[in-house]
Image (cartoon, rainbow, N blue to C red; front, top):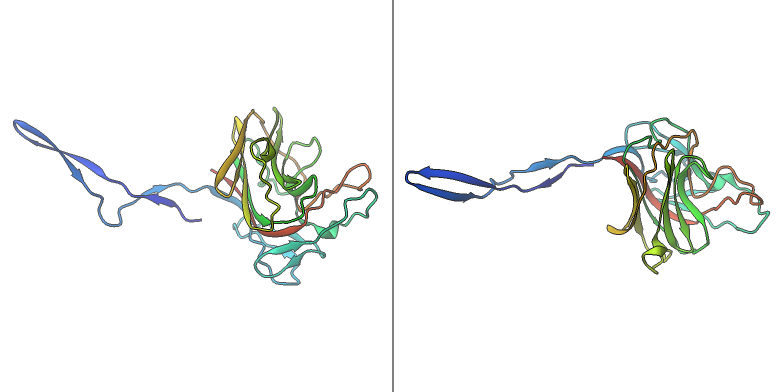
Length: 244
């Protein structure tokens, strides 16, 4: 990810007794000032060829994962098919992409953002897009509830959630591509969709560290009887995790 750059200008102080003159100096052609880009912790581009079984982390950190046998990669994105949400429906872990636990993926106490570009049209209640941890575990998740998006972070000092439905009636399960970012700082959690800040919850969450895998499109520990698997259906273009 390249650095963001912006043009700069200067004010030159010129003296010639007894006068003091301020002269505007335009920036030289190509003159720039670097803004530090976020550090990429993990980047799953979801561009594996059909039949691939390894989910490749292109960040260089080696956080590779596994592509479920029921997931369909097409070289540019991955499709997750529709699963029944009726009680007692068989558990199908092959519907998921998973990334084994790596210590470097947990937020710890860092500022931390999860971004996912995706499209879906099935407005099922409470389906999980991507998560690390579940239940009351100190972790995080991005989920959809009837097309509304939720960001949740649970840490040693508390829990913070942003629900898009609290801010807008719009749903994003419309079959179009959307980019969702859930961010956690020391004092807040925020949700951004397609570059627009949807909402923010001011709450300290503390340390977020666990040994769970990253699970994409549903839960890894479930039985669809006492714990729903919350399988999501749609296409994912990429998932990125960053820290400032």
